[in-house]
Length: 279
Length: 344
Image (cartoon, rainbow over all chains, first blue to last red; front, side, top):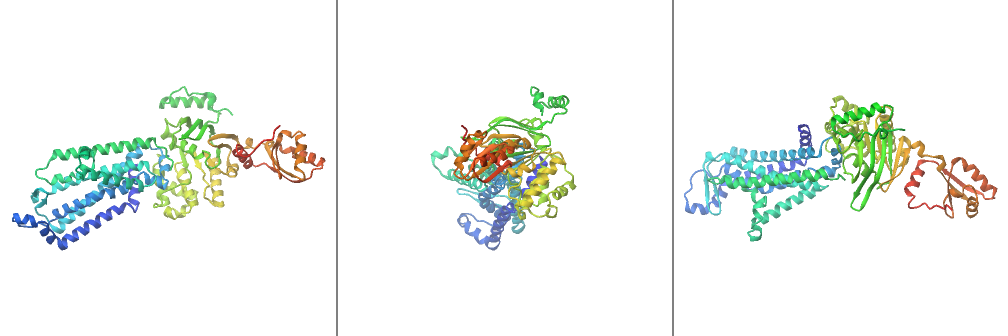
């Protein structure tokens, strides 16, 4: 398994396409950091105008924690697309290149082949998130320093103490990893059906967008569906930035996401095992 | 020639221990037999309403080059994909190296090398990287020096560090062969290995196949839609059309001089046909047209036929006797469509 995994990772990281996601994330984070570096104070003053009418706020507000929170809010909606670029290509890309038929004639069971592919996809997803964490958190802290974190919500303001923030980011990135692996699993499943990676990539994003719309629409017909839609749980990493943290809600979301991963991967393996390779 | 079928031990269940006993017994009982490396029984594959392979049975002996012939769409690739577990048969049984393919897939594929249609490889990797990558998946430990040797064997040593995207189709084909051979398999399955190659490339592949079989004792199952290719290298051959077996046997026996096709043009075809109908060759008439008469006779009868026609004052404008297997192949594969018989 380890030998096969090394081969898969070698293939993934020798492809130029793999680095598109890393480059895109680096570019977006850099631009946000640059914007805050040059004009961040003015932006925050404007954003907290209504709050300052009621409260007297002293001390440093613009910090690495604040910038990282804003980056995460912006990026974690778009990262699924970048994940789908690689995960959707996992099987369909091999079929498209014509290498799938050669791989399947090797003395490796199809289940083992699929597990290796999925594990490689998970490693890629995790590396992308670690890369994102380093750039958005470590670099932001290095540039902007640390302070208490003020999070404005529609009906309340949460103020987190400087010493009580870092662990929340680790937890949030861990949760985001599970959410992104859910998207990767969906793209992986769809990849089994296609012989061109565009299909599963577009289909994955269409499903994510459709489910997100259903999640945000407050229509009774769809409300019954919401608890079962993975998109309804993907952004619950924000739960770690509440005080106190609602662990019950977070674990419920994790349970739903992990359930989706298991179902998607199980279906992908079962379908692939029975599939005639005609590419 | 006797085969393992004579000493049928299929009643023994295929657990590992009994499998060993079974094959030891088979070797002991039949030590002079040529074991079937591939044994296919009643193989069929249905895609919706289309029966791509229809009740196909054949056996490939150890060490032989077995030609698998058919026109495009005849079912060759589907059969090969079933032999390589890419496609599941709808019906039938496949045994390779004496083992049931469904039960011993891993063991069989460890001893099998293959090219399926054109060898598509990772274009962004070098020849050496592609070779190492697929070799690592073959389940066999390979010494480092073997990689360079294998690339030298297929004439790619100078380009081992070039990316595959810079390769011509012929070079990719040769690299595909190197990948198929790197783990020293007993059985090599090649699906149209000369597709897209120039004449020199075709000759190189042909020589390589002959070398693998004659010098290294490999069993080679090679498909083609060009009989001329197979004719030059194969010991045995199978011709299929619309998924069905049309002919199978040793190349030497399939080419029977008694089945020589004579294409005849005379000064008076109507009279010539009348003469033939009154002669010993009345059943040999296959078809005719205003221009040509076709007969299926023994090669040695041709002078007699010519003499008979001339004795009836019928001049012979042209007479072509076609003895190549190409004609045999065309006759078989087009028999349902074009050839009408004129047997009385």
